[in-house]
Amino acid sequence: MRLGFAVAFVILVGCGDAAPSAAAQATDTARIVPRGSTAAVTRAQRAALSDSLATSRRTAIVAAANRVAPAVVSVNVTRQERRASRSAFDWFFMPRGYDRQVQGLGSGFILSADGTIVTNQHVTAGATEIIVTTRDGTDYQATLLGEDPYTDIAVLKVEGRGLPTVPVGQSADLMIGEWAVAIGNPYGYLLGNTEPSVTAGVVSAVGRNLKPSGNDQTVYVGMIQTDAAINPGNSGGPLVNVAGEVVGVNSSIFSGTGESVGVGFAIPIERALRVAAELERFGSVRRSWLGVTVAGSDRVRDWKRVGGLEVTEVASDGPADAAGVRPRDVLVSALGRPMRTFLDWEAVKLDVSPGDTLDAVVRRDGRDRRARIGVRDLPTTIAERVAVLGDLELITVSAPVRQERQLQSESGALIYRIGDSTARNTGLRSGDVIVQINRQRIERAADVQEVFRRLAGRTAIRVYVERGGSIGWTEFYVQ
Image 1 (cartoon, rainbow, N blue to C red):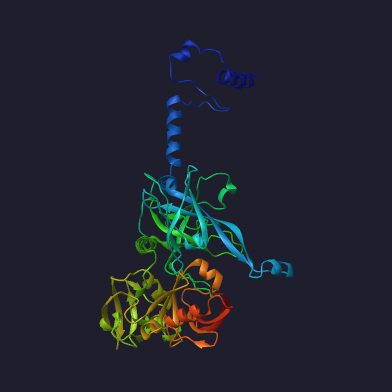
Image 2 (image 1 turned 90 degrees about the horizontal axis):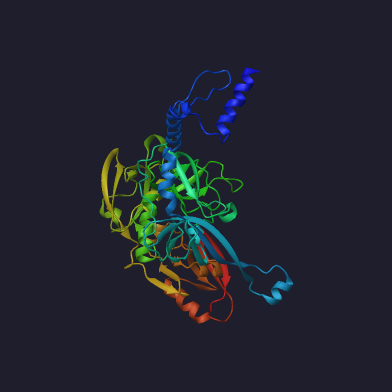
């Protein structure tokens, strides 16, 4: 009974409104006596415990999220999607199919205080309107400065002043197993507000090469792998280290369901910034030309032991030729990275720009030699360029172009650039080679311009293209 009375008394003192006694006022040792214990905790001890808990809760991940999250945005996209006519009724009223308006959502991050934003190209693809929403819920109309399907990077611009920006780090020194934080807007406003979500994991691997699918223009090579959860809507958001620095752009996942299974990938920040700078300055990305073709790993005998990639072709008077590289050399390393498969070489080409110098090591007759290759743009003096349909840029297939792009066709018109709207309406893609239109053989880019001019407004034309080493065709009207 006394124990029960004592417990009740402590509760009443702790919760009641009665004034404390003079003894309690005179000392800072008010005691709480737990059941079965005689230990006492002073107010000072309780305050110290509270401070200790608050300190332990404020981890490096919390600090990293606080540093970057204010500059993470939602990217809300409206696009027109063409639907094929599915019935006789549809065909009667809409003989060429019809467009419907669809909404898309991704993430991005602010690079400059005046409103330059980086996101994924697959977020902005085909956009007719882009609205950027900041953490506090403010909406901005965004302008697309440029996008590059090959690297999956796009740059937006909003009219802002004094906007928060992300600190930028580097991915080159990432350690496997170190903490990684993904920030973005998975599922958009289904989660109730514009506050970005934070997920944490580790850097699972670096330098990952994802084998490209037959229909995908994007080359995902040299990627950062993480098990921080990345879900729909996270695309374009930052991957952050524990110092609160952006080291990558979240872009893709391996999943059979579309949900995170702990295998996500981010584009290294160095590549993203290089591409973003090109898009902001030129509106497109200049492609690096090295004038050398390497074989797939299956062409190099015992490549796991020897290492390197066999050089199969070297363009005459090209950058590699000038650096002393010869056919049948073995490319051992480039940019300090070992070359094991052709995807390693693709990653190197993505990470250099015209005007750079590429340091490589080639093996010839059992001896390693250093080669300094001056990177150039795809040659324009020997590759005629022609613009048609407003946003379709063609290049005449020449020997260097054929060698660099590993084309089967000896002549034709390579699609160097194509706008999203034209791509949707024609079925053509960047990298296609137009080899024939109806029954006319295409020898150079100007041939396409002439045929389009002659057949405009008449009837649907059939365009034959080389894509991925195979010949296919598409039909469309030329207005």
